Image 1 (cartoon, rainbow, N blue to C red):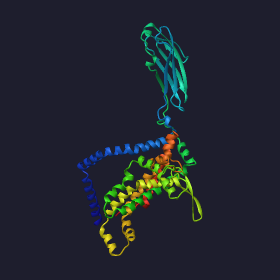
Image 2: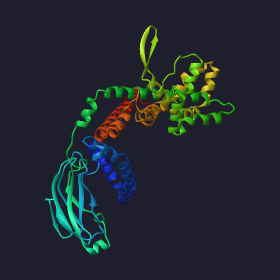
Image 3: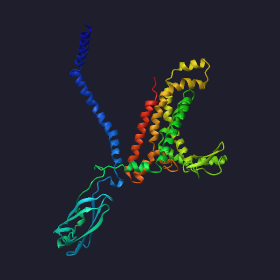
Image 4: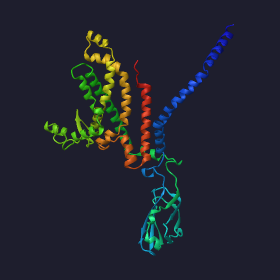
Length: 437
């Protein structure tokens, strides 16, 4: 007797749930979708579209010179006296292919002279009819350049009021495949990236720069927050001063560091030599490594990379400082008072009370700072230009795409960076990241 009752109760419950989705609920669902549609379009336009475009370019053998579709280009010159009737004028058409590698098929050219001028003879590939010339060139190979000559004669009316034939622009036609829109793909960009001898060196430089730069910024921010969490006179002013490295223009602080660290006229080198710490000036941003001895061991210390890491930690510690200080001020003072009553030392108070409360924000900060530092380009480029062992993957994107004009290879490096960051973020959020309770 109980089974039919259970079945009927389940059917009744399902019917009640279905009855709740009435016309009003459906209209609300459609309204919600309609209101979210602009946001989805903006997300696709701002985030997904550039990402998909970068993926597309990374499998294309495209250079900066090939961003535009190949097209025939012609320039016209006139030789002869325009104001003398009966004089034969030489008209030169300088034809070229805008691409150095792609060919253009079915190239034709037509031009019409001003009234009073008549073509007399022209290149064998051209036909003339009074004031009009039509030329058929067929296929232009990549890098094609040629000069076509035609001759025309003027009458008295034209000589009295001459008009330059260059005022009438020649019309060109031709078909060419655009490397950006065709369906030809290649993995050569990725092979070139991974086969390069310096790729793994650049990769490990990027990892070192990112990890130590991120940890340095967080440690400095943690100390600054701990220092300014207590009340004292002038604390508000000091908090504002601590924000200077982060809010100042990067180009200003970068060139300030360059001047301070200059090996010939820099302030730091002058101080070190006056204090007899060093006998010769140190090129902090231009010397790849210095030889150090420690406990009987000799090793090369990466000087320029370490200097750039110190700059990174100094410039971005204020962000960590703000996040950590805000979290510290939300911790209940009762916990600190109880620890003080129990006789806990400042270090014990920090280790057992402050740090566990900060793990959530520190975890989030590390993830954000790691991603931002991994993608950092302007700091390194302004300080060293990627020289002296400071070349990172983002600098490599610039070098490949713009310095070497290989846009496809630059896009491939950018895709590699994106994949690395996605894998890191996924792993970090899955196994390491800690949420605050």
